[in-house]
Amino acid sequence: MLQQMKATSIGFVCWLALSGCNLLGSAGDRLFAERDFATARDAYLHVLENRDGGRRVESALYHLGLIYLQPDYELYDPEAARSALTRLTHIRPQGEYAAQASLLLALQGETVRLRATVQSQLVLGREAEEMLASLREEAAKTEAKSEDQSKRVGRLGYRIAGLQAQIVKLREELEATATELLEREQELERLKRIDLE
Image (tube, rainbow, N blue to C red):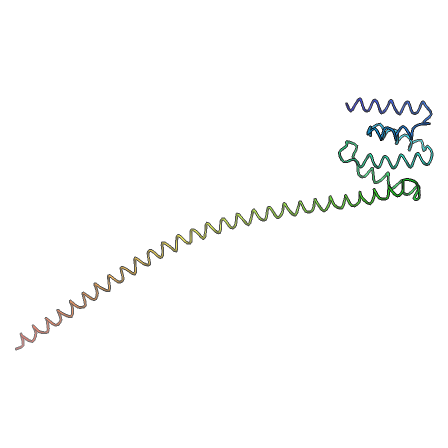
């Protein structure tokens, strides 16, 4: 299909050259209106190469700018569009297409700025997502550590409760032993007194 379009474009340019280029501007405009942008582009480039009349050059530059600004078309080339439209505004600042060319240049500049802003925002968004993922990972690790520490605290609390129970039991045993020892000392004192008497 692309080769057929190229062959058609080359054939058209040859026909224009043989016919003396009398209808080139209008033929390019007709092709443009039919959305045959590749052939229209070739026709407009031919006008520029041959420097045919002022209005034809203006029309060619303007329409080339439009062709190159079609984002969904294979000829999309914002830089070539800017070049053609800038050239148009320089050669005929008050010409028929100058105001529209200036507007298209401003819109293209704004589009470039917006794309740069969008790209920048996308980069910032990706960085934020990466940072968020990192924070989530860190939070998960901290939570895991916290759960581990909670388990340790729970185990230590259980041990402390067990040790406190042992201490209470030892105190009871110690009190019982102290009471028994006191009773034996008293028994021993009594026996000593009996022996001495």
